[in-house]
Length: 593
Image (cartoon, rainbow, N blue to C red):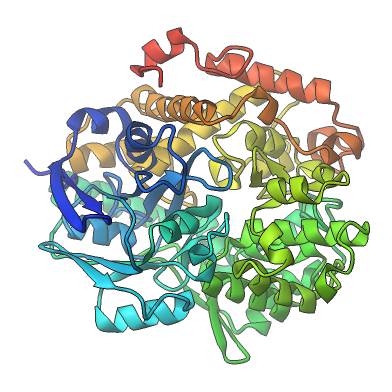
């Protein structure tokens, strides 16, 4: 019988320009399934103590067992490396066509290490690996590069970096299929350090199934139920920007003016309804996806998919900017230059607060006041090219605050070096706990805002258990890999996994995969400087009253937050310093790193 696993992976050495095909380790698949979990296992073997920019630090492109199958949202793939922004294990997930192309090229995952002596384009197909000179593309933006390569290699999936990645901006991203992004944590800078301008992937291999008839039956039922689900219709109509209105009117946790506030007077300009009119939205989505949650925008001769909620929130209200075309332009600049819109937006809002508090002098004449959209548009290229003040801000808020000093660390809005995302924790305590305890502080680790907004959470010892369990479930989904927006859980996914691969996983087995990943990530991050002292929030959240949610109108004390974190540690089976115990590692079949 067949399997949706390809049974092999590709090793690429950019230094020697050699490549090798190796057999996929079946034991790793049993423990980690694929995607994030498999990538973290490989990263822990290769780069535990290496610098993110060291030649031996790998870029890992990983598919999951469901990637490229007919299952809804299964086009996704994971990029794993070591973050130059926060120093720990990084996984960044992307839709588009990359995941299916990894499989069609014949691989479960691809490991790229080494450093090219000159800029390169790496082309991977079913039967060949090519090292193509990339000098003529170096310095160009993502849209131009991907346009040229898609024309040169029709039907291929293209990954590329912009000038931000070339200049090692610590939150540089990697573009894919023009509008998809491996966004958070600086993977684009790792790619730039290797002088790897782009990766082109294509192939002709077909995915096989352990039980193709059963898979077809299960999948037809799932597709039918997804299409009929009310959440699918809402995402189709409004996209992720629905959270601008929800964050303002219902949750009251819309990040505003560098997290100082949770309400934005001009929010209506950035709602789905207004953006659809102003930017002539057309429904689109990832390759073959039935959710169609993405929106193609067009204005003033420019095109974009988006803005998505996170990009709009952090380049918009969090910078005090309410003009929809300015926010879209900022998003477009970040995408073309290769910058994470979230970290760039939060870093810009940090600079604005510094400027308004008199900590940046004249800021090279940029007039970085909240609400000054023109200055925001000028600042983004300055960061990408590391010019003047941009060289400081390209380091991210933690390092920038260390450079600027004068108490600016108080409003450098990061946890353990990564800029906060999602919602303002001043209006959503559960989000703050999830951000502080996850492997890195991103909303992609666990979205708690809906449950707290709808009154389904309590401020007691069940909250840390809820966060731990939710993180494990997301780890599992990111290893299968399916989209966060797929509205069905393990009861529907595990039968698909069995039909695709033959793997028999109970729900308990599957959740232990997610828990195993969390513990592996924690060991890796602790080995690279993460400690219990990092599992917290910026000072602002302990000095200003909460505006909504579980602690509405009250002050979040450090004592309460530390208690929640310690309860979380106990729920994880970690010691009081936040390190996995030997007993827990033995239970999960892990060796201490």
